[in-house]
Length: 362
Image 1: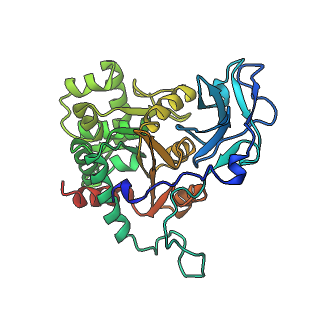
Image 2: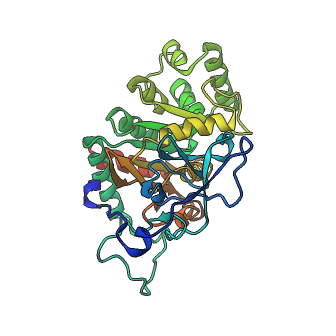
């Protein structure tokens, strides 16, 4: 499923409303980190702003941020990054009448659902997912072959099982991952499994609880901290498998965002929440497909900084976003972001990634 199959249709800027629309109003920031009154907050869809008689697309957007006109283009900036003197777009209508136009239907396809009644329109345990898997395999192959950027977001469940660790590592080594985002737990238990074949003290294959196994993850953290870095730990202890090992071996960048309950943490874990967000957004800003598995915390965080589109080589294309979790509540938290922006699968993340490995023929 190449993204070329879904073409983007720009707004009709020759229409009477858009052609005659006024320029968007701008106001200068008076105090760092504080937006002017009546600021315009961005969403997930392509947004155009009329400046100097010309409609301009905000090429890199994210939810609940500000549109700033700077250096001849529209930049999307978080409140905390605002600097005194920056010119912020004002206005809270999105139909063009204030020089702001949100284009919600640029990727609409003929024959899409008319809204007629039907059973099981939501995504649940009863949903048929076979086609979703087939489309995902095709999408991943297309992204890899056509210069896309695939970002994976994972919770620790992905490292608790022998087969899922091996499957995710195979996906990374085969070039189907351009970035990994997780927390301290995913990396800790993956490295614990590489060192001791356990996760939280339980054998990752037999499920046998090891004597004093509750020490295993903190012993692992301690050893990594003594080594000074994850790569040095992998080298010193001759770790040969797992998700993080695959990242280090292949040079795949990873961001480990800390949380308030972290043990240790590992040296690479970013404890400053805004520094972690900055590093996450750096990976998100390059992604054309994002797959989130078994982590409500990181899925929602990633979703909030991910638009429904990406501009690649001057062309607007969809950004594909998947949320995979065994909990219907978890995946449905993002459904109100729009059908284009997120596709959900209610399933065990361990089974999911094993299916992906097999579906890609790895």
